[in-house]
Length: 580
Image (cartoon, rainbow, N blue to C red; front, side, top):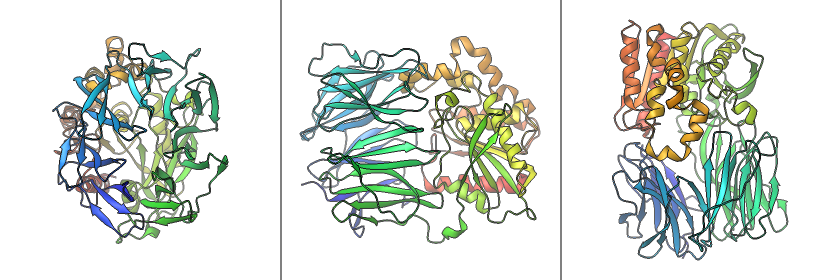
């Protein structure tokens, strides 16, 4: 029978593992007990309590799929030292499920169908043309594929698995640029929902009728549609819209076409929505600036929401945390830049505080509202934080998104410097003590600020940031092949833009860095390899500038172990307390 339980991933022990929770929240059981590598639950099996989960090694992003059987024994479904795999969908009859893996070719993902009983598998689609395999209809007939032509243009194709010799068929013909992104098939396998900005500044949700081939506008807003999800039989549909850095969620009863209100008492953003198979309950997380994600369940019959977890450490008082405030400021060319401002409780015009400009990853990411432990830690220690969504950030329309294309280290950096000017204008900020911090692409901006505008900030914290674009763009992980052209469209092709890449790479201009620098790196990072940080640290130390380096031996691009996240956060505070 189907498990009347919720699959939860938690780092309660310090390492992410899979747990099961009862709907009343009182019964909890650890299903895995990893002491090293993070484990993330994927799904229960449709007819029993077996578990699908995924895990990599030390953050190297080479994920495998595993089955935990009801007796606790574990079987790896996708073996291979270099095989990367992910789960796609269960079949309508619950006899099969689909998985993509790059075992045949590290650059391409093939589609396999696995039997639920015995796990015998069959190659369904051999991916010779570097498609992105986005999904499979639950009846197994249709496979949706995508081609990224550039970072501003993409197409969706359908391949008929019942007629395997036929080629994929383009279903999104259009003139000019237009992004098309798969959302979901309807449970009855009759329509495909997809998002596109072809008709608007923002991503709208459209549907494609697989029989009539008709396109229909489904959901529009003056913001991007992030996701659309259906319950198993299709009675309920949940939609998420990126509304000024917060996801606005709407639950619809498709039988009445009326919205179902969720009586939530606490404020926050709804995340990771999942329906029970019998469509009687809805599980989701509620996340707020001052509260980590807590698991909730909505009962459709009772019309009530029940909170199952309390994730905030009991030693932390919620009243000591601060809410972010969405603000906007003018940049060098008068363009309005959105940002999220965090003000320490101690900050007053009489007692001004130092501040940080925080730059998100990407390129093309977005700083959003919600609980961020490292931000709260900084603010609690008396540092104001301005999380900047510089031009090129997602969530504010396609025009804004493409404003930094092939202008990286220039206009985006200027937006961050003008973020400092905005902080200086606040009466409670000590304008002479402002630093910059960021991870990944944000780490690049940090290093670029110190190298190209040495007097723009007093200190910098570079968290696994790109420092050598020549190397990074020429040595991407092989599984990035399908979206390489999109990245090249934004950053430039190393074959033709190598000179510009060298020009914007902080490593080659490290002699200019004269402000204290902290660098944090994961040894197993496949995106920004360790040598990027090693070389920057070595180069800046030659300048006689204070440089500190924190290297995590068991992490990749982002820190999954709680003790490492705490160590990194403590390093930020210690460094800033000394130099800012």
